[in-house]
Image (tube, rainbow, N blue to C red):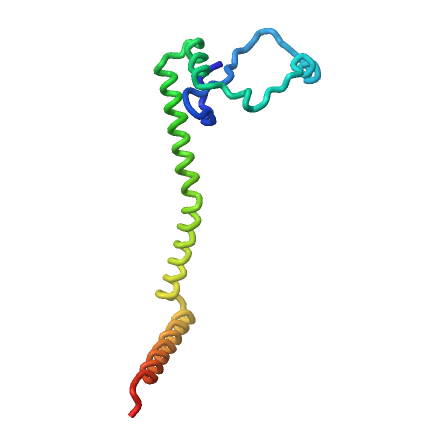
Length: 141
């Protein structure tokens, strides 16, 4: 076992399976392995407590500094992931705001002649509506 980088552990150093090459080939069929290991552990039984993982690291010859470094790496990774996940909804909102801004610019600063004409007609209609409403509000003589 070696110090790992899996952020799934809740606290302390993550441990992983190490890889050491064995010069002898060991071939075992899946059926044979299943016969030799009939007991299947539950997910809860696969969890190693923090103290046990720390002891595994000490027994494996890792320094306290190595363990702290691995623990900090996992903590920073988790914070980064959480920050990224929190941005997911905000990114969608930012995209919608940008779309609204683009549409607003097109309305305010039209580029082609037909858009300019539509804008002029809309301004004329607004002016007529304002004029009509002011006439309705004015006292009759």
